[in-house]
Length: 119
Image (cartoon, rainbow, N blue to C red; front, top):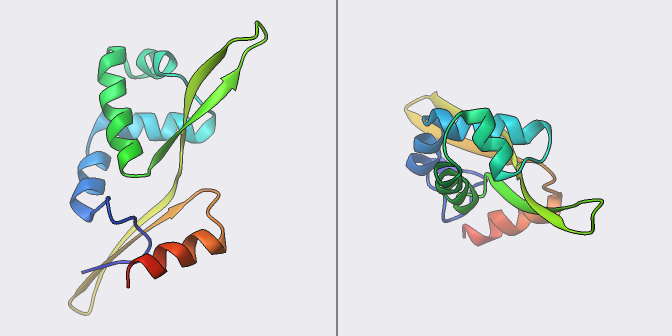
């Protein structure tokens, strides 16, 4: 089994478990369009904010979601979340299982660092 571009913390079973969860998928889809707060995600998913935070923690730990700060006009700020997942690919060919995750905003240096860390 090969994992070509995944951090050491996120193994295949973790990613598949997350993608198998309806709320986690909804969070990833919603935050791929625009940054959203936990409250906005709660409304979108129809679940409590504490449920959203549990999913956000798991998605962030797997490097599929990142936290950002959104300034407001009143001088305060909101914590919002943005999906880093661009593409997830699983292939079974010639007796081998390979998988790959592409993340948004990842440049060549990030990819090389990740690959170097796998050696």
